[in-house]
Length: 193
View 1 (cartoon, rainbow, N blue to C red):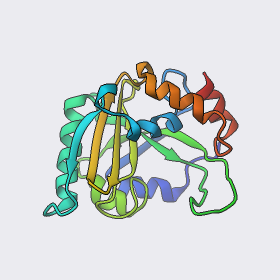
View 2: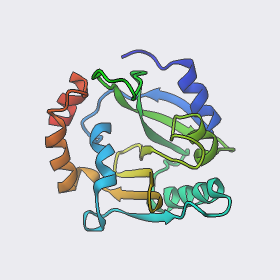
View 3: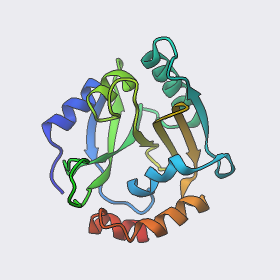
View 4: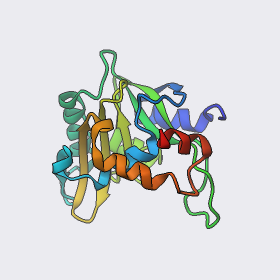
């Protein structure tokens, strides 16, 4: 795995997330590829959160407020304000036609005193696809809390689940993912386990 590029560190810093390290693959954490299936979970799987309308006044501020509230209430942060962000470190262009192995890893970050997840973080592309358009995965350091942010037709969704390793729907998604040609071999083995 390549060391993080300066652009990734700068993009995280613009969001107020201070880069600490890329975590090695660890079986106690749900693989990033599997966590990415969290958007498909329902309330019967323990997923809960908020839906914010696209027409909300000062959308980025509202997303940031709800993100922080959920993160604190659900236990995303460690005592020092650290947590994990699921990122693609391959540098692959998601618009490429040819299949490319995606090198997804959990990256440990620390929340800076001043941060802007929904604005600068999404605008820089590290946490979304433009300001107010989140597309991120986050986890507590112990992996017991996952958070998902996504942009849908109905609105902006911010949601969490606890104890993701025990969610049957995520385990089923993992079984499906192991045949993906886009998963790098290390991620595939992690997902199989």
